[in-house]
Length: 364
Image 1: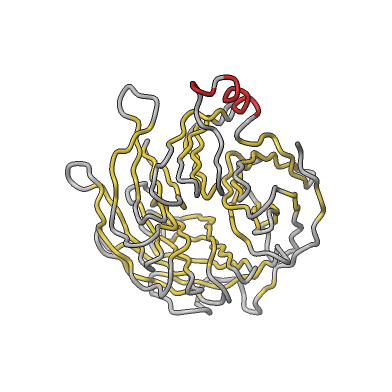
Image 2: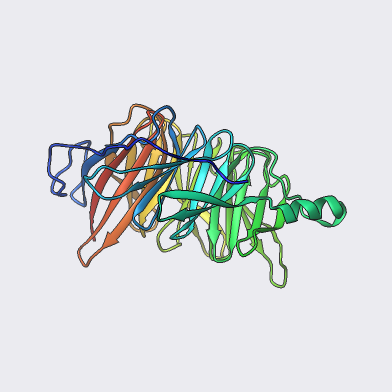
């Protein structure tokens, strides 16, 4: 089944009257190591909030709580046309870009969809997971096949090489092959409660759950399936977000206790929480790595914070970015670097239905 396509109303970047340089900050406390500047507000989804964000090429793709997916040009300050596609029932929970013209989306209706992005301002559906082949095999050989269906909202996705990882409120972790989108493995009851986040690095898969735990899954030598390798327990309440540092050395976790934990491999190869980042007043809902030791966090307290590692066991809050009128649902960054600074555009989406764009300049 294919989507029906509609041309959405144009959305306009709302510019500040200040210039777009990065010499001073306008929307919160800053630091000598960071300057930040508010650039624009994008109102893309008129009657629903943005529930997922990703960047691919020169476009920002957004998924909404009403199940639509929009595409907007990153060009500022020009008007940005968006393309909307009916994308199932309920919210779009996650979006990842598998190539410059292909998106994979996770949905409230328990499905994963693979989309082709065309230059002619439209999106077509290539596949719905589980595929017809997987579903047919399950019917014909029920005792010898992976449980391919998610039975609750698919909450997060992660890509690594030729594999796609999905997690769900049904407490399962599934592994898919991106070549033919066959489901290779389903870990049933991977957690004791809904799984909200997934991250991948160096062959390890990390899942974060409402049970307050982060679990580490690995393939043991000679085996094709993932098995539980470790449990990371520091948060006392649900884990909402996971992110890897730019150099893959640190795993960050954000939870409903308003804390962010930084995890590293210690002596013996075991992961330990080496730092706890305190400052948010309410639950941490989303995370995005900016540079090797810089992390952005979005919270139900309606702020985005920018943190920088000092050594291996300490972090400082470089900035508190305000302006949203609702909890920050998702954030993403578009980064570039030179010899003296690391510059990025930070996109934050909140339950106020706005997407705010800021320019961050970090001294190296």
